[in-house]
Image (tube, rainbow, N blue to C red):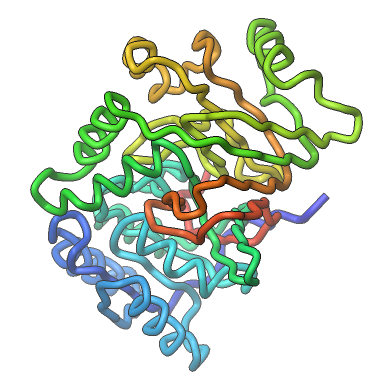
Length: 337
């Protein structure tokens, strides 16, 4: 069993990365308030600004090269956190969060205050927890980390559409609007998903167990299970939510060394609409076309290799892909229990 250390650590100097475009431009204001509060608490924040994933990664590599920082503080949303994870995963460097994005699902997972002053106090208190991260790899040897969820079905198309809306629609409403549009005119693909170390999610109801067995057969003793059919939603969850609190993987556990997998079958859009609110609220047990698995690793292939794949709201790699949980790879500064 991997070790998941938690506890208070000394935080005196931090690198503060801000995306001025996050949260429809509110990130700079949040960063200023957080910086002032950190200084009042005796924490020196050295500020860095960037606005693209590539720039974020470059800036963070430069910032962390001198080894003067005890933590990286992200003032932005899940996409900016994702950029930082590409540098800090498996290094032991903790990430602090000043929520200033559209969805802020990482902050929601760890109950980090949305008020920048309170979030700064949380960072100054220095309570650090260790979590799993998701790792996605393609056949060319490229790898990317994700901290929340990874999707490659209707939800990925919705994320892609939400991005194209820019600032014309604010915050989490972009994802709601995009999701509705995708549900009305869904793009469905055939997936082959090979799961390793598989089980149903804990506390599955008898109905969920029966429906899963009817679709995919009983899970073999080896734990290896293959799904091969047209599927509308394929979502792997290290954490519970995306899109600003939509509970796509409501039972996901960041300290179990596995990923939850939510599968939605190819059904008529009216059936989606009937269960849409229950799905996003995490009430999956009574939705007949939803199956919830848990796995350590998965191989995903699709004939349409260019379909969108998004993790933490950011574009990932192209099919075919391997997705896996990496135990104890991430560290976050969170409110003390």
